[in-house]
Image (tube, rainbow, N blue to C red; front, side, top):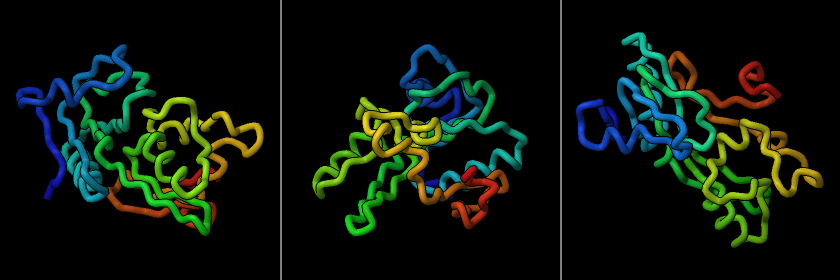
Length: 172
């Protein structure tokens, strides 16, 4: 059961939902799922598999390089929870969170994340792209500080991946 929003080309809201922050990409997905949580991502992946649809995932849309035409577009922009563990000096960040959200939570407890220069860039896309920010020379790339990811694999299963769990998916 989908908790998020579903948009088809003929439904109201489709044109707004298909837009990325990068307006150079004009995409026309077959359908769009705006996920409200991991269960929505699982449902979307399983639906795409059952209907032989390609999948595209978009957080904020800053890094969109090509259009998701004809695909099932999973938008994670509403998955924005950020939890900071002060003792471990770590943050758990959902797939749609932006750096400004993380910065707000970490600054409140005297921590600084390995972020870039713009608060509205998505954490996940930035991190998966390497994460070269202002603090990189002293503390390394954001991607090097990742301890684990919770991912939905192509078979629709939720997996925790790290250097020790499913390391082939972690790229560590």
